[in-house]
Every structure is written in C-alpha cells, then in structure tokens.
Amino acid sequence: MAAAGASVVGYDRMKEVKEFDDSKMGVKGLSDSGITTIPRFFLHSPETLSEIKSSPSQIEIPVIDLANVGSNSHRFKIVEQIREAAKTWGFFQVINHGVQVSVLDDTISAIKAFHEQPIEVKAKHYVREEGRGVMYASNNDLFRAEAACWHDSLQVWMSPGPPEVEEIPKICRKEVVEWDKQSKKVADTVMELLSLGLGLEAGKFRDLTFSDSRAFVGHIYPYCPQADLTMGITSHTDPGIITVLLQNQIQGLQVKHGNHWVDVKPVPGGLIINVGDFLEIVSNGKYKSVQHRVLANASMESRISIVVFFNLAKWRESGKYGPLPELLTQEKPALYRDFTVEEFHQNFYSKGLDSKSFIEKIKLLTRPVAGISSNPSHEKTVTAKFNCLRSTSSLRTFSSANETSSPKPSKESLELAYAEVESVFEEHSLEQPCELSYP
Ligand SMILES: O=C(O)CCC(=O)C(=O)O
Ligand SMILES: [Fe+2]
Image (cartoon, rainbow, N blue to C red; front, side, top):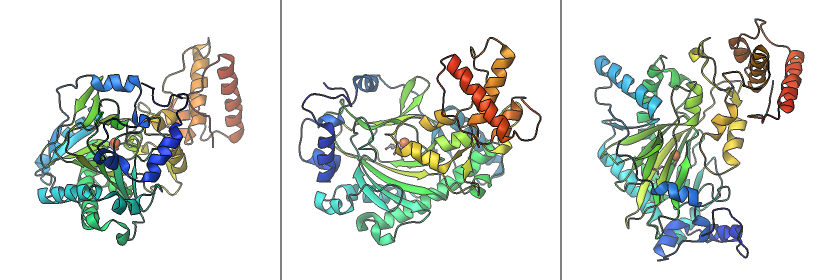
C-alpha cells in the first residue's frame, strides 16, 4: 500500500483529488455508489493506521451535571469539576444543560437530511471559500492535508457577519439558526464556569467577547467500505476557545488522554465540550487543548456530528492576543508570547489539520536553554533575551526572567540582543524553535 503523500510512479494524486472535488459528490456520494475499495488519496500512512488499531482505554471522559448551576452551593462544586476536567482532559460532556432533547434530535435530523439529499441538490452549495458564508464540501483541508478523510461537512459562519438566512440550505435552515442560539447559551454558561475556574469573574469571557465568533459545522461520516485504511477526521486539536459538539448515537470520536485513546461514548442528551488552542493560550496553559480524532465509520448507519466552534473574536483594540495578564505572576510568567490574528490564521490555513502547531510556535522558553553557553548565567541571559525577542509583549517576559528592571527595552537594545542570540544559536548549531520576531 502506498503511504499517504508518497509519490508513486504513474499516480497523479492531485489530479484524483481534484476530480473528486469537481464531482461534488463527497464521500457520501462515493459511499452510496457502492464502491468496495476507497480511492488511494484516502489512504493514511501505516503509522497512523497502526495507531488506530490499538484498543481504546476503558476510561471515559468526565460527565458534568449542570442541573442547578444557578444555585450557589451547586455552582461551587460544578466550577471545581469543570476546572479539573479542562485541566486534565480538555474534554467533558455536560448533561442537564437546559436544551430540550427534541431540539438536539431535530438538529441532528436536519443535518442528516441535508447530507442525504441527491448529489445534484447538494452540489449547488459545494464551494471552498472558508471563513465566511456557507460552505458545503468534503474535507475542509482536502488540498492541504497529506491524506483525505472520510467525512463531508456543511459549514455556516454564524458570527460575526452571519450569511443571509436564505443562503443556508432550506432543508436545515431553521435548525441551524436555532442550534446557533442554543449552543451559544450552553457555551456562555460553560465559559462562565471556566472563567470562575481560573479565579476570574464569571462574566470575564463574555466581556472578552469569547462567544461572538462562531462557526457551525454539520459533519457526516457515512459508511466506509475500508474503514481500517482511512480516518473519519485526522488527529488534531481545535484552534479556538471552546467547541460544543452534538453527536448521534454512532460512536467514532476518540480523545487522547495520556498515552491512550479514549472512546467518547454518546450520552443521551449530552453535549461534548472541548478546550481549543486559544483557550490554552489565554489561560496560560492551565486549561489543555487535547488531541482528538474520529475513526472512519464501519457501520451502515451514518455518523452525524454537529460542532460549533467558538473562535477568536475581536478582543483587544491592539489586535494582539495572548495569556490574560490577570493570570501572570512572577512565579507563573507567560508561557506563550502574544500574537496577531493574522499569524493565527496564516498558521491554520497553511496546512492540514494538526495538533497544537500554533501553540508550539509561540511557546516561550521558561528555563534556560541548556548547552547554549558554558556559563550558566550567560545561558539564562540569552534565554531570557531570546524569549524577549520572541514575545511581542516583550516587557513581561523580560522582567519576569529578572533580566532587567528597566521599564522598556529600547529598540537598539532589542536589536543588540537579537544579534547576540542569533550568533549564539549559530555558533552552537541550535535550531531556532520559532522565527524571531520583535516589536
Ligand atoms: O465529529 C466529531 O465528533 C469531531 C469533529 C471535530 O473534531 C472537528 O470538527 O473539529
Ligand atoms: Fe475537532
């Protein structure tokens, strides 16, 4: 079998991918056509495939009961549970969240009905313009990923700047609009609890407009005739603040916990919440964004999941984002440098789904880089300077590393430090963990 992305003589992978995309049939169309072998561009690497065979751990993600969240005595306990779950799992299910089961069922049915329409009906919506409006396509990252996955999605960027309601396919229009409202309500409650869990005011996340940028995604994972050769969705972390996920009763989602993959068993009436990369960053690493994936569906019944991503919203006038200053102390300095929304998007749209690549890019060094110099105090200095250069909010890191008591390093001193760090890295043939940037 050819490894994903490998070039094979006589096989023009990009041509096949393009033909598939042009057909607008999606994997649902392929599945319905009765094929018994899947096209080669869906095959994942032997490493990925061997990993999906490992039997999942029997433990389960925490289930948190939100009943009585309004009462002070219950709230305290729920905050504790949510904090623990967001810290150790990055994933949890909530029950008694206040949304009626009939609304959950109607949303799932409407998305299923959309995907079950004839190809020519759905094809009218088949576009690849991400970030706004309505997009129906197979695999968002079809042209960016090394191997395609066995799912199609309908996406609606609901806020800010929602599409004209008529742009949303009629068959699920009412339900999409309603689910956006309901999932936001649940997210607002969860965000209050997460905010309290960080020792901040309940309304802090709302004030930071954390629920103002939302994308609705209705996935279908139809029957796959060779489910052990591909994935439903490749392992990844979600980029935003939190994700609210509603699924039907067909299992497939798995979450990484320690070294194990854990099945997320559908809980009737439950909603799954997970922490995204952005929340890991603003919480300065307290809450964890965790890898998850979906196995390709081997059952004849389609798996449906409805995901609402709460993404980066306009938060600070400066357009810079980073760990919340309220959470930083001398003992707990910033673990990540500030970044711009452009940098964030550039990273997301430059490759297929992956895990924490953005977090890795902006991670600051919290300990001196060993081996950088024979003199330990020089090591510390260079590391701090290096961090200072990586951080657009350089002051914070600079002073937290006790490097200087001066209020703000001048551009000249930054340039000198930059030159010094560069030469030390070069001298020791060290790989720079990220591009150097300075204000
Ligand atoms: O379908 C699912 O259960 C998960 C989907 C997912 O992880 C995503 O869309 O980011
Ligand atoms: Fe995800």
